[in-house]
Length: 401
Image (tube, rainbow, N blue to C red; front, side, top):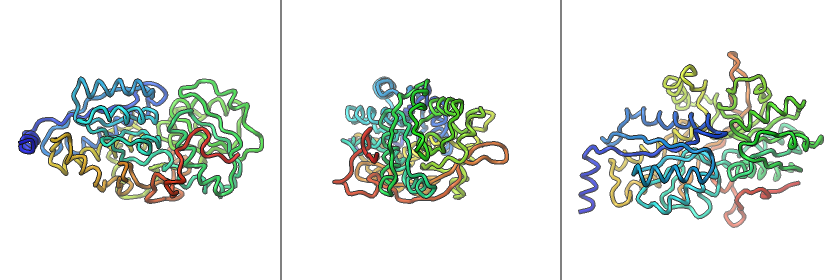
């Protein structure tokens, strides 16, 4: 009877309600707005329907704080009664939403843009799926690129929460193994305004700085560092060279030209599917309407996760009966076609996918974008290590002073 009822309900044309959670306040507000655009684009590409059912998007906002994100998720799940929740954006939020998902087995949670390792590596939730690779996976290849550039000693300046820990681990695992040294790590608060004390701590004998700062934090640091006469070469976290930072309207952003970085996308990648995605984004969200010359990191990962949510619904003909059993099985086994190649999930429902090593350059129109230096496929969450030897990134892991 339950199977018959669920099938009948799926075929009846009832709307599928999807909650969409992103940071529309705080330091990542610009990235969150572009994340919303990416998710909406995946729905637009299906003309607002999936498996014969209209898609109803209900939006909610956070400010990158885990407790605020959970409160927003509670509203979507417990008041709005969404079937699926896509989000959140930031790393600490992702861990908190993963934990909350365990209390709501009737809802399927699919990540938005958050990239902390612990979301899926530490006590994963059976109803939380992440189709984007995470912060440490995004940095694979950057350590080698830094060493080849001649950077032997690097100072880390990063926000003090789970996602930057992951990014720093992804960089340092490779960098330290190759003989690099990180004599100083400066962990700064999310949403910080004054970086003078950090700038004063920069040793003269480091070859470069690794910045894992996003949104307004990255802009504030760059302004203050250049005003202080700083001239060290920069390495960037994935969020530091995203379009929401590169298109900040000010001269200081030019200091990012030449910055080596890595992440799940590269603006200048010439893959056919990527170029088609960029053109579709630009058509729907031109610069004149608030979009960027190329989709930001957040637009891309939200697009990928929303596409996964919809592809899964199509695969089961919209059937969300029996606590989404068929739907979750389809998600877990899916090979997701993305603009940057196929993505599959591991046993923790975590993406295995592609990373690009990049360099920031300026085009003829004066826009900054990331060109491809190297493409690394099939990057898994353990960074090539044995499970027994792997430790989740933290303030002190890894360490090579």
